Each structure stands twice: as C-alpha cells, then as structure tokens.
Image 1 (cartoon, rainbow over the protein chains, first blue to last red):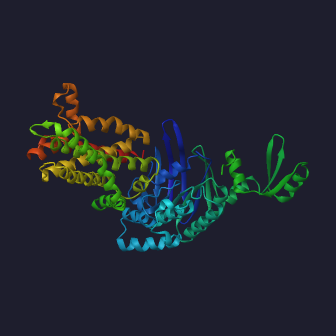
Image 2 (image 1 turned 90 degrees about the vertical axis):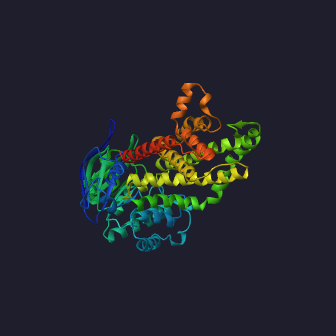
Image 3 (image 1 turned 180 degrees about the vertical axis):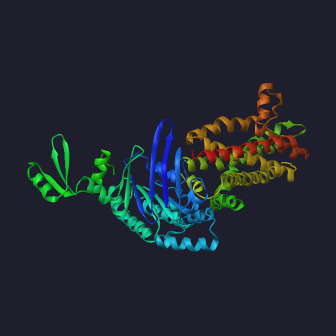
Length: 277
Length: 246
C-alpha cells in the first residue's frame, strides 16, 4: 500500500530523514518509533504532501508523490490539535467534506455516522474550543476518516492524553484495522506501538536502524531481562531463557527484577537512550 | 475550482455570520471618530477645492478603512492559522489548488472591507456629506479591498511571528493611512516624498474614490494601478502557498 524508497529530507545542513526505504502492506498497523527529533514527523509530513522530499520516491495505493490522487487516499491526524476553533464540531467535518468534494447528502450522512462512531454526536453543534484533548483527538480522527481514505496517518495520536482516553483511542485504532484500513502511526509511547502495531520501524537521527515485528525485535535481545541497581547506575542483561536469567539473578546481591523483554528494552538498546514519555 | 473557492469563502462567511453584530458595531467606532474629529470638528473651518472638508475626507476615510479591515481580516487570522493553530494544513492536505485557496481567502477579506465601507457611506450621509456613489465608486472600492486583502495574504505567508505581523502594520499600513491622500492632497509635499506616495496603492484608492465621489470622473490610471497590485499580490500569494511545502 505504501512504498517508500530512498526518502531523504534536508533542512540546510541538517538531514532530518536519511535514505529511508519501507514497504507497508494493506491493512497493516505500522509504527514509526524514535526518540524526539528522530525524523518521525518529517517522514509523516512528506508522506502526507505537507513537505517536499529532497530525494527519494513515495507511492501510496498506486499514486506517486505530488499527484493530487494521493490526497483522496490518505487521512491525516497531526500531532497538534489543528481543528478550526472558530467552528463547531459539525462545521469542522463539513468543511473537510466540502474540501474533499463529497456530495452534500453523502457528506451529511457520513458526518452523522462518524460523530456517532467517535461518540461526539451530542456535542456536534458545540464550538470545538470547549472540547477536552481526548474529544479533540477523536474529532480529528473522525475528520481524517470522513472522505473514506485507504491509509490513515496518526502522528503521536495519544500524546498528552490521560490513560483512559489513550486506551479508548487504541480500541478505535484496532477497530479501524479490522475494517481493512492501513494505519501508519508515530509514537514515542513504546507500549502503544507494542499494543497496536504488527510491525515497527525504529528511526534514529533520520536513519532506519531496525524494522521488524515487536516480538522479533525483543527476541533479538533475548526473551528475558534481569535488571539491577549498581552505584554507577541501572544495569540490564538479556538472556535467551528464564533458567539462565534466574541463575544470573541469584548471583547478584542487590535488588533485582527478572521479567520478559519488551519493546521498550529493544528500543533503548537500539537507540542507546531512554525514551521520554 | 469555483467550488473550492466557494468552500474557502464559505468557512469565512460562517465565522463572519456568527459575529456579524459585533463586527458591525466594532467597525463603526473609528469611522465615527474620524467623521466627528475631522468632519465636524476640524472640517467646519476648512474648505478644500471650494467644497467642504467633510466631502473631501469621506472618500479618504473609506479608502483607509477598507484598507485596514480587508488587511486585518486576512492577515492575522491566516498568520495564526499558519504558525500557531496549524489549520492551514487542513487546506494543504485537501485536493484543492493554491489558486482556489488564495482567491477564496482574499474574496472573504474583501467582503469584510466592503461591509464596513458601506457602513461608513451610511454614516457619512448621516453626518451630512454629499457624495456621488455610482458603479465606478463601488468598482474602485472593491479593487482597494482586494489590493489589501491580497497584500495581507502575502504578509501572513511571509511573516514568521505575530509580532512581525504587528510590525508590518506599523511600518506599512500606518504611514499609508496618513500620507496617501486620505486627509490632505499630497501635491505640496517635497517632490521625493510625493513620488513615493504616488507609488503606494492607497494613494490611488483615495484619488480614485475622491474623483468619482466629487465629480463622477473615472480615474482609469489609478484603477489600472490597483488592478496591477492585485495581480502581483495574488500571484505572489499563490507562489508562497506552493513554496510552503518546501
């Protein structure tokens, strides 16, 4: 569904995205991970035609980058709340539908249906300025889905939201996948990627440093991890099986934790940094 | 294309319709002050070209007011939309052309300028002014609104902070407000300054509106100059909209 080859973006002397190549299948929920400033948002901006690449090619559902047909195929939920605060929830969707040339009857039916879907029907005529962060994000998802895109781009969809709202959005994203939508999301909440994505790509300083399923990335390090404190800092060691991990933990004299390796461990090992968030 | 222009315009109209009462009331304040201070106050003791000063300054006030309203209706909201609210992105990812966006925004700004100018015309008659208001007068007025709505679009797409937008007002609009044949005839100013003033678009708006309102003459040269400014600003606006993706 999405084919990216040699994608590069330079801002003066700084390379934000460096020779990125990816293929994302139809119906896949794909995660783009990386520390702040790794190039995730720039990649999304190039894929959604908000930024022109310096080099490389992008093809989405048969449309090349720059073709107007891409705009009909993609739905975008940016990181910042970019709803029109001078309009109501309904009017925000109405504007989107008009911009995407949806016929009036289809548009109205779809708006009503999507407001129902994101549980905002009763707030349709309220100004969005009064909405909470979770409501704004849900409305932005409804807006992105209005013109029936085939690919949904979600840039940090749950940043700044409380855990209950975050889990509610996760349910929504899973539901979209079940309906056959291809979803590309960026996040620096590792548990979010682990919970939602079939495959993840990890970016650092604009470069792709890993691409696999979350389980396979964890397996690379070892299925179990032992963590312990030492005067010089927090230490971790990975083991292929639980027995060896237990044997090692028994040799330590400080408080230790033995647990299964998760995607965050893989992320930290690969990027060499603890994630913020 | 026409449908897309209408969509962009429709959003602006929706917002204006919601606050039309507040818009009209707030737009009446400065013209009333100008008419009282310069028309009734100062104007009683001044005669210009055998006519009353009130009749002289009303076209100037209309030019000045339509400039300000058209500019601020597009400038600050678009600048905020581009830099802070990021709502411009909604248009950038939609299948509409930059031309449609620019024309829709400029037309909506010009409409606000026109509405407030109509208010001044009504107020001017209430203050006892004598004006010839015909089709050419409205044509010149529309051109002036379009000049400054399109100039605002260029400024909004170029200035990288809200403060820079305010500075643009201070350094460009404010001097024009006083110098461009709005309150006096600039012929007696030093030659170099007069030349500079003759280049500025508001001068041609003031001259055109005054010529039509006082004698009914059609100042073709000034209308062509204003049309030229519109073409340049709209062309630059479209180019900036394309460039914003780089």
